[in-house]
View 1 (cartoon, rainbow, N blue to C red):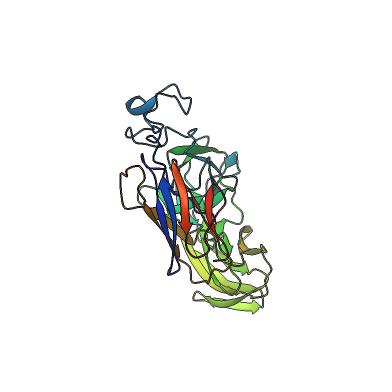
View 2 (view 1 turned 120 degrees about the horizontal axis):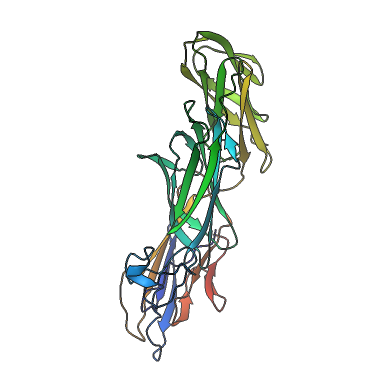
Length: 378
């Protein structure tokens, strides 16, 4: 994971002190005595940086003040974002998985990602610690994004069985002023397969060997009469059952079943089970769990990930000041936190020099490469 400073101050010169896993590191930058003031932000430079026909604050709605660093999605300081569920159409009662990709246009950044669910679509789960909030939103806070490497998060959702045919389901994702939308058309009536609709999810995209996965199965009777069915799940290879909700029976090493379940008209019931992932599972192995109810089925896919899980290192940087004079030193403090329960080895950090600054020194093995300060093997 690369960690860069946030947008430069108007006057930037620095001594950088970096704290990583309880170890203090520092790097010193000196503002050149003959350096001028830093350049204007994109919202005060008189240029239409994002080519939208509007210039600067207050004309450009993407500028909240003259000090904004980003004028819009095409700004050099912004990010690129896309969102898609990979479908052109979906039926009422169907499931969708939205894939959101965010990439820095320039320097690495720490951003909040916000996703708005379409109307008639209900949240089921999300990857990377995404939190469901009021108003049909899912939010990820303090996500690091880099250039030429996409940060990918996902949201799993279900379409209402009452969704109106030909309506457009419009989802929207935003990050650092950039926005993207995805449109999927509701097409046709729900296909009644034995009178049931079924979905399964563990709410995760990645898992480490040795960890647990907890799955939720939702089964709905789509008819207006009582129906009975067995609810069955085929657990992923290289996993073993830990627990399952009441009424279940294990019929072999890979199958769990809830027999002869009664569903009233339009009734939906949930079933859960937990598995543990074998330690020997290889990197990026696809763990597939399949749920059945009547003739309906659904599949959830989660990939194994060795080492630190994605998005568990969080970085912040501050110099504790708003202004500085030429020739003075600034101390930047970079805090890097590992928010997982795993030990991270062979990690690295990178800090970019501010504009109009000269490197002086860095502690704990930090090396200056002419443009950035780098710490290896952390």
